Amino acid sequence: MTNAVHAGRAPAPASSAAGTAGRARRLGPGVRVTAWLVLAVAGFLVPAALGGSTQIYTTCVLVAIFAMMSYGADVVLSYLGEVSLGHTLFWAAGAYATAYFTVKSGWGPLPSLLVSLAIAAVLALLVGLATLRTREFVFSLVTYATAIIGLSVVSNVSGLGGSDGIVGVPLLTLPAIGGSYVARTDADIWPIAYVLLVLVVFFIARFRRSRLGANALMTQMNPGLATTMGVDVRRTRVLVFVVSAPISALAGWLYAFQRSYVSPDLLSASFLLFMLTAVILPGRRQLLGPLVGAALITAQQQLASFGGDVDKIVLGGVLALVLLVSPNGFAGLGRLLVRRRHQAAEASPAAAAATDE
Image (spheres, rainbow, N blue to C red):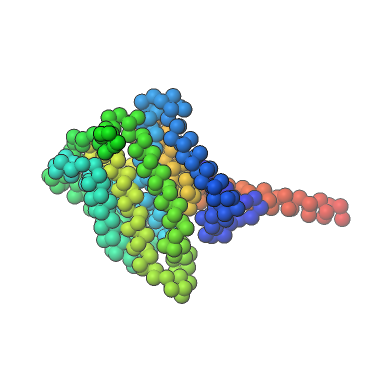
């Protein structure tokens, strides 16, 4: 599911997206579109192919939701090279705004979605401006502080339900031909979750090829060169942060309907660990990376769980292990193995020739 790597050579620092685009250009546009359509249809049929049980549909819906949540953090990590520990704020903002406006104000799902995305974008703008002069460790600390502030707010503001949260989020109801589509079960939510996931992946694919995506990569790798090339580094950093937040908020919007309530646990460390592991495990700048990571983690938690607390320990342990063994995730490990195999293949004839001499 991740981008393939040519054997025998290591990619350039920014070559993951460029390599994918290069390989795609060698195929005709019709072939590319057909391949993506086949993949999309196959993905939609996964729950039915796995038996179509309630548990399977729940797992697949959560995979889609958590993948979207993780894509938001992936944009910042992959294209700015910064670890945002505050993206749970945007995820929770999407969920809380949805619950508040549907329960307290009687809004429908679509108006609450628009407000959720707008609130997340505004929060991201404020956080982006606050972190404009920070990098690396300090950036991570400041973003984490914003999540802690958010946790304190939702836990203590009575209008947001305090520690109990907001319960009674209505069923997700969308306009449809001949009436309304009411998502009463996870099987009903699945088509909506899947369509949103596909749209997010498409958006990320477009972002990778956009001017903003290219400027963000240049800003990450060589800010001085980026400035020389006419890139406004500060503006780019803020824009990328603002672009990333509504993606996580979109996941929060859907999660509020799927769970029927929201609570301060949305800002807990468990969701942060999930987000980071889903992004780092497959490797950065892999188009389907967060989806693969979310699928692996959710499948373990839903289908092979060791219990709530143990699952959190496992998740934290996996994240620590990946950072220690292969900081670039599965993709980086794969590149390393291919490179070593190629080097070994080149060394063998040379060693044989030296022995003959």
